Image (tube, rainbow, N blue to C red; front, side):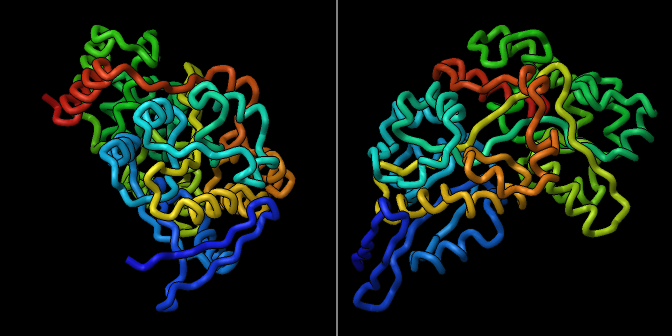
Length: 365
């Protein structure tokens, strides 16, 4: 195997790469959520550093954890949700980010770092990337046609009351294919702890979802974005930025599809995605260079503009447009934030229960 060499001066915020004997550039292997990076970020990184990014995507936390916990993934940098961090740290798959190894941490929001420390004590293994909420993306016209002008678009009743869902099924309803994101929503809606480890609570959630299952078109964590934008479905449980992406795509297409995103009044999940370096990373120095690059305010601000997800970089906020900074779907109000809840990893026994319930719900039996 050819050895790639990188000379990096992170303290100065710059890096210089060398070529191998065959003229191949050093590389960094990145694993990220589907459609979750700025449109020119990878190209800009290669231009600015000479490091070739090799980029793969996933569409659920379950897929990510399964890949990483097996070991030997071949990736250097991974975007991991904060609620996955305790499991990944306990399994020993993450490399600690040594003090001074990332010069651009100075730009990060200290309050967000404090929140992240709940899942990464001492902020040893992860730095914030983007964050957001889970709520409801919907087609304004089709929902009104199905449920009338008083459709409860500000409530989980829109999807979790069978009489509403049955009517919406005619225009198409999608849910995220992720038990760790969907089942907490249902539990909270039923007045139960969203991070419950009680098997009886999951039986109640299962009973409700099995009743609703005939009216759900599909479970998927990527397809729903284009289907919302094209009018192929009318409602989806969605990440905030994904719903806003669909809205923008519909507006640019001029196809007459009018979309909106709502945070249900009962409360909804709020999450934080982080950048981590794997312990068995083949190219750890290049991995640190990639992480440090994404922590630049001038790099992460365009990513937020493009994806409509807020970032954890306080120095980037002045670089954002007023339209993004003032959009409550991107940056929720203090009142809305007070109703949100975070997701936590479950004990292994409870996780197995949750996985079995979800498999049963998806199959409908």
